[in-house]
Length: 224
Image 1: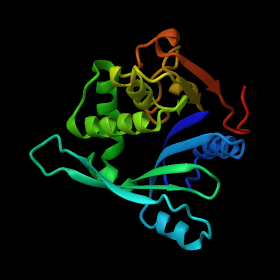
Image 2: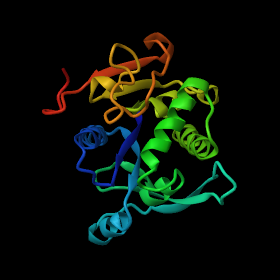
Image 3: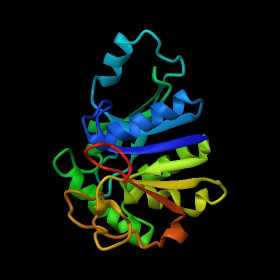
Image 4: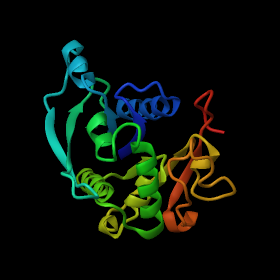
């Protein structure tokens, strides 16, 4: 299998239970010989610290820049992108968290701005310039990796993976659900804003989205 997983928690070594559960899944799949890759967000200095203390950092390390336009007359934001294969076999594509937040108004405003733009994209298929630049970047990375399975726990990346630009890829879409509010359907869809990644429903049925939902216990990390 070729598995592409999209993280939402910030930090290369986030303490988030969802992040840890997702990473544990990737580590297991890598140990079984599958090719796994995650998109995540790193804080300043995390990658440098990891590379300094690691004896087996993969030579495939590379750096790049994602330019995200502004939705006003202000200059856009350059976001550093680092790519490497970690010691556990997980290929990692890490966006600089501070730069990413700056593209959406800074650390304080970013969650609200991103939620609003994500809801607009999920409903209408389009949104403001910075989010569309990120979506284009995400879709290009998916195309480049050509996964057999794509795993996400937010409506934005789920919707982006269903775009016509990726229709030629034969891949299963898996929604890892840590809380009922993250489901794109059902009575809790788009529920409490502090728990859900977007403020509205995706608007697609299970069959249309081709989504397998894994309900995961927040305490034990096991399926329920």
